[in-house]
Length: 338
Image 1 (cartoon, rainbow, N blue to C red):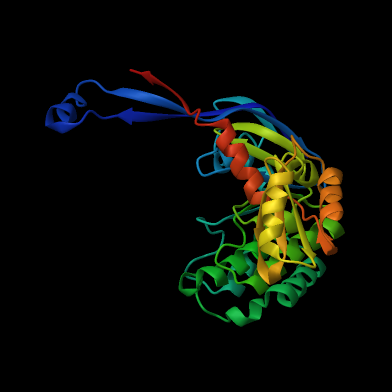
Image 2 (image 1 turned 45 degrees about the horizontal axis):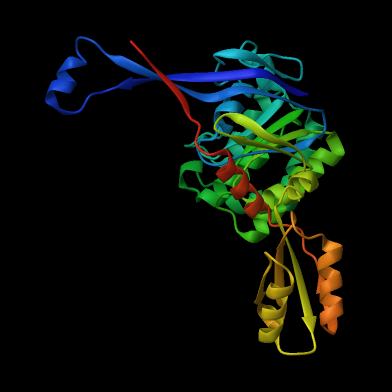
C-alpha cells in the first residue's frame, strides 16, 4: 500500500557570512549549503498495517510524510501510495488518504466544526449512509457535539485535534497519515483516539502510518515499527522485535528479608547487573543480556532468596529508542554549492 524506493530529499540553504561585510557580499555572490533531510529511504507497508515511523527531532519523519502525501516532491527516488505517485497525482492521491498534521489544519478557521464537516462531505462526495455512520462513531468516541458552534480558531488545541482526527477519517480513506494526533489531549481522549484508529483499521482495513513522540500511542496502535535517524531507516520490524534489541533487561521481585542486603548480594553475584529498591520494597534488577540470560538471573534469585513474587517486564520502548539514536550518532549530510 505504501512503498518507497531510495527516497531522497535535499534542501538548499543560503550561507550568510557574519558582520556587515558578510551581509554586503551576499548581494554579489552567495553560497548555498545543500542539506539532505531524507537519505535513500526504502520501505514497504502492506495494506491494513498499522506502522509507526519514529525518530528524534530532525530525523526526517515529517519530510518523508510530506512526500508521501504529495506536499513535497522528492529530489530523487520514488514513492507509491495505493499505486499512485502522490507528488505527481496529488488530486487523486488526496481523495483516498487522510492526514493529521499537528501544525496544519484541514478545517476552516472561521467556521464552526459542523460546517467544516459539511464542506468535507461535499468535497469527498460521501454517501449519506457512510457520513451518518462515521459521524455517529465520532460522537460516541470523541464527543464532537461538545464543541458546539464555536469557530475553529477559538478552540483549544485539544478540542481542535479531536476535530482534526475525525475530519481525517470522515471519508473512509484507504491510507491515514497521523503526525502527533494526540498532542494536547488528556488521557481519556488519547485513549478514545487510539480506539478510533484501531476500530477503522479493524473494520475497514485502513492502512495507518503514525509519527509520534508519545510512546503510549505507538504501543497502543502500531504492530510494525520503522525507526528513522538522520534521514535513514535504521530499524524495521514488529514492536516485539524492536524491544528485543534492548541491551539490558529487568526483573522485579519481592522476598522475605531485608532489601538493602539483597541488592549488595545481587550486584556481587551477577557481574554487570544493578539492583535497587523500588516502590513497595520490591527489588529491581537490571542485567546486561550480553552476560546473562533470563534463566540464569531467575535461577540466581531463586537460589539465594525466598522469592514471593517475580515479574519480568518488557524493556522500556523509550530507553530502546534512546540507545538507537545515541548509537547512530550525528551524521547530517551537507555540501556547499555556489
